[in-house]
Every structure is written in structure tokens, then in C-alpha cells.
Image (cartoon, rainbow, N blue to C red; front, side, top):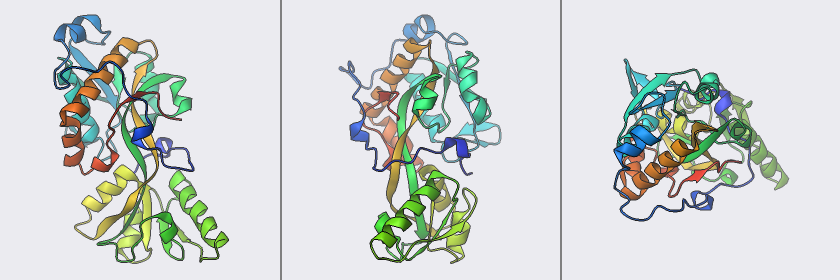
Length: 289
């Protein structure tokens, strides 16, 4: 399903590369080792001792969604792995996206995982451990027959995009660059989030632009009719959210995440969901802008 507009990222002029994120200090030794269970169960402030209670809005495949009564998706698998490394059980609680920050801030959950972009405005209320790089992603007909990769290849073509989002801003900005360079503008077909695939599959648009995870899901479920076109653009981090007074828990989760990355389990999870292009190599606290 498409991401709510509140998940959209601020427009940036350049890619935010994973390599630019601050490196976590103090993570030497065996990266595959789990944190002592006593640290998680006794020393860390948890809503329920021995259990990591996680708030999520499970409406955004392939990151988090429901399969019957079971939570599923890349976010679910990542956090489940982190809880295991900390010697904890994990419980996911369905929570509306707009209520997630207040829920963790009021200690009704220990952390948030819900494809939430780490932004400066949100950092005023919660702390983030960045775990994923998302961005805008173009999709095209299978095999990308028009060779639509970098945005400068979009000139003279028709884009299906929600004009009220950062994805729409990206296409509009590129169209202006096209005309400034003496090339044809990008024609825009305005569609709701997640609906560009319908126009591309029908031949009514040459390409669509969606949030990267949503684009991956649209391509995966297209029965071979669509493919990704080029690399993710305007990248920004998704973050695991914590109450500002839960820094001990935040730091313990960051260590577990770095262990998962070093051990290769993190990469396995993202690859299983077709999201390996969004993998981080190091973590950061409040690394978003």
C-alpha cells in the first residue's frame, strides 16, 4: 500500500549516501554475539520486563503489513532479530501512524518501527536509530525499454506521480532542468500514491515515481509487467523511534543493529524483501536532516 503523505521526506538537492552517516563507536569484538540477557531484562527500561513492545502502523508493504493476524515485512523481521540479539521477546502493537510518536513518548511502547523518516522536526520529540535508507524510485515497463534511469533521461517522457508529494516535486524540478537545457519538459499525469503502476502498465505513462519501498512492492506484485528504473533518489534515513528519556534502550538497540549488520543477518533480511539497495553499513543516532 502507498505511504501516507506524513511519511514523505523533505526534498534535497543531492543523494544522502549511507557512507555519510556517522559511524557507531565502541562496537569492537564479536559482532555476531548477542547482548547479555540480563542487560535487556533487568537494566533496560521496558514496558514489560523481558519483552520489547513495538508500535507500528502495519499498512505499508513490504516494510510492515498484516498477513491475517500476523505482522510481516522487512521492519518486522529487522526488529525481531534485534530483540533476539538482546535476549528479549518481541510484541508488535498496531498503532495509527499519526499516533506513533505520542505512543512511544508516553511509554505505551518501547520503540517505533514504521518506515518513519528521521527528520529534524521529529527529533524534537523522539530519538532515532537510523536503520534504512529510502528515497524516490522510478518504475517503468518490464526491462525498462526506454532506458529511463537517471532523472536527466526523463526529458520528453510522461511521468505518473502524485504531484502533492516530494516525488512530485522531484519530477517537477527535473522538468524545469530539462527545459532550461533546451530539452522537452516532463509531462506529468497526476495520480494518487501507489497508483503510478496502473498508468505505466496501461501505457498511459512512460514511468512512475514512488517511495522506494512502495516501488519495490509494486514491481514485485506486477507479475513481471514492471521493473525498477535507475537507482533510488533523494535518499533519507528511516529511524527506529525512542522516547527522549530512554537513551539506554536506544543505545542498546543501536549496538544490536550494528551487530546484525556486521553478522550479515541484516542484509539477508533486506534481500529477502527485495530491499537490499536501501541497506546501511553503519548506524547513526538522529542522522536525518
